[in-house]
Image 1 (cartoon, rainbow, N blue to C red):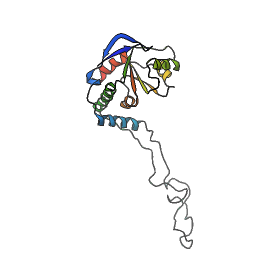
Image 2: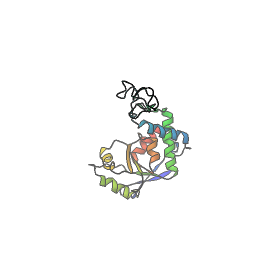
Image 3: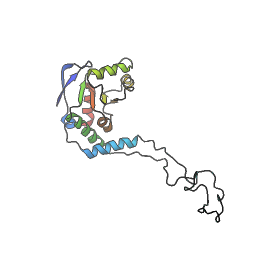
Image 4: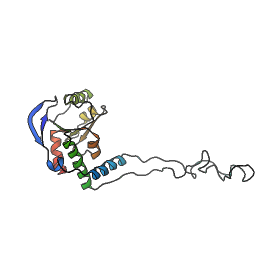
Length: 208
């Protein structure tokens, strides 16, 4: 598959790039994509949730009332989980939700996700560009010129570009990642993938 390289004003250049069929034209593996997305979402969880059980709540040094004669069910402590203000039974405690995947699985998931986008013709290639200072207006104009200003966009760069990142972070539907450090979730969550020309080369180097 060949794509025209676009300028940042949206017009086409006289250059074309060929998408590597080993990355962009494979038969997607849905289960591997599912595992990669699930792993990414799990790894974002802090796991700091915590509640107090009956050994941690205050009080309960003596029986709340006598054993018999009150007409109520017997109780031994106000810290019981069936008492108001008591501890919680089997509540959440801090834990690590991290799920690691083999490198081959991660690579296959990325190639599968990119193949889906290529099949849907949702990949654009733009000439390399840099901003001298961070300004949100610059990215808004870029997306408008490319006619993707109302869709979820993933912009992939070859190097970490802080000015571009800071310019795009206030736009809720845009995401800037260094290639090929993007995740499968980043690709699947975006409607359009915008590659800088040099970023496409980085993908070929790492994912083949």
